[in-house]
Image (tube, rainbow over all chains, first blue to last red; front, side):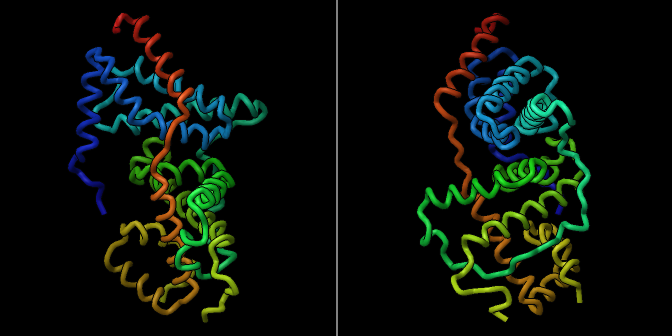
Length: 209
Length: 81
């Protein structure tokens, strides 16, 4: 499927806000902040796993965006652009903490293990009934936190924030195939982690065969 | 028929409906004949749906206030407020 060419209402509004902010409209820039601060904060928390670092990243990302607004190319989304700034800032934080080794989202991965599946079991039809909203939220966030940063970041942008594969690739400066293989791996790993909680009682592997 | 490994390699694109019709037909045939892959596909789809439902992300109020204060300082220093 080709990327959708037409501009959604959300992107159109975003473009108008960016244009106004570019001409010095502070209120327009504040609207952009309100629109994305939650997502950027979560992304920074996801990568750095440290609240203080994430807050620094959040501030640095929006201050840098404000400073370089004139360099923003209107042919990509503002959101993709600020995600890229925030990812770079987050990686810098990680590098500072682990000064003995570089940290990159572009580490080589063993693609041969992309499709390893250990547990196969059907799930309860309604985990929502079995777990409270808070419990469910805890299970889902806990599972994501256990992923390696490279998988966590791709998964969050793609499946939680709803960026397209191409936008995720652009934001993370990865190739489309690299995004796809990380996404597949992240999804399969999460599926496996959630199976521990959601598998139908008394169901072991192959029980349905 | 596709092997399970080949099926899993295409799983993400299949779930995102990004596969061409020809491959899609092969994947659907594999699904109909392989209960293991059917379960993996079904539970992976549910996994994605769970996280897509997690959209709302609130920011702590103090973090928001400090961000706005930092941006306002910046704007003032550039004479835009």
